[in-house]
Image 1: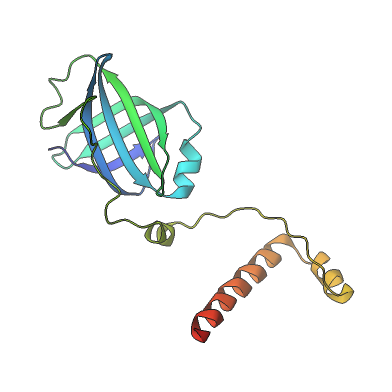
Image 2 (image 1 turned 30 degrees about the vertical axis):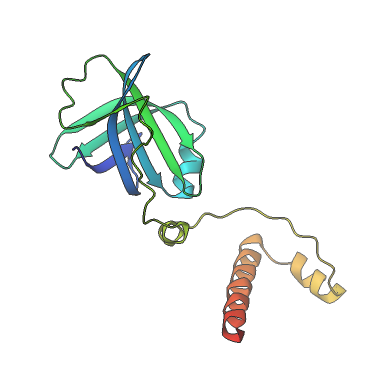
Length: 168
């Protein structure tokens, strides 16, 4: 069975936690499919694109270069499905073949948690807060730069979480 060693998308190496590469057979034809568990940051970067230039290095040294279509797989972990139509599957020896009637696909989520993924790359999100504070604190806050406030709140929340865990 073929195993993925590395993946580059549009020339950039991406970190993946687990993967599967296989041939998918359907009544419409055959396609090469790649399932990847990646970081949330990488998923945001690629999820809205239609086509990507993908370079795959397999454990046996084979290289696959292809323009692939993108599917995002909903679920608890950030997962990307890449696929390209195939005319001839003969050059893909040692690849698993999955039929459209097969009840199960490769389970690449097993043993991986979102916490482990976020240790590699933590996404940042914008948030707007409405607070009711004493005027002297408001005056001080509005004078601060965004980067300072981001760091202040991040440290405050982590310290608060730590304090709460110690109290339990």
